[in-house]
Every structure is written in structure tokens, then in C-alpha cells.
Length: 86
Image 1 (cartoon, rainbow, N blue to C red):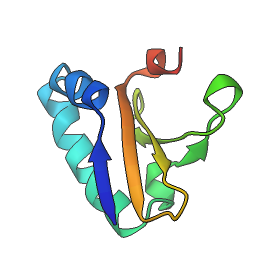
Image 2 (cartoon, helix red, strand yellow):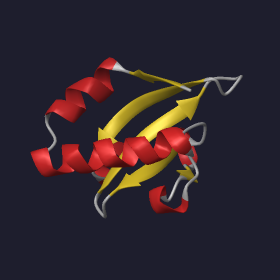
Image 3 (cartoon, rainbow, N blue to C red):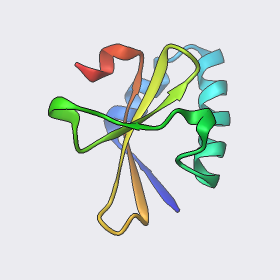
């Protein structure tokens, strides 16, 4: 599985607190093994983001992502607190 990080994701990631970055790295390791592992709380989004999915980094932060049509490449689109949904 290949993960591609968008420029927005990279910019947002740099702004995260260090403890959240550490947690994000741990969650990404789980994600690489199984994107739908129960610990990630992966779910489809609704509304204007209905083509995307999200998984949890702790209680407050999320990573928004999407699969390519063949599900071989995953695009990490954004990371942040619940404001990234807006």
C-alpha cells in the first residue's frame, strides 16, 4: 500500500503539537496494516466530503483520506481537529 501526502496535509501536519505527531505516526502504522482497524475508528464522511474517509488520532484530531479507484494508493488529504471538516 502506498500513501501519498498532499501538500495541504504536509502543511497542516507541521502545525500539529509534537505529542499529536507522535500519536499520528503510531496510528499510521496501524493504518498501513489495516485501514479499518477498530482502533482507528475509520468512517465515511458525509455531505460535501462524501467521497472521503477519516480516521482518528486521539480524541480530537483526524486524518482525512481517500483511496484511488484500484485501492492501491491512498491519498492523505488533510489532518487536524474537527475544523478540517469545514
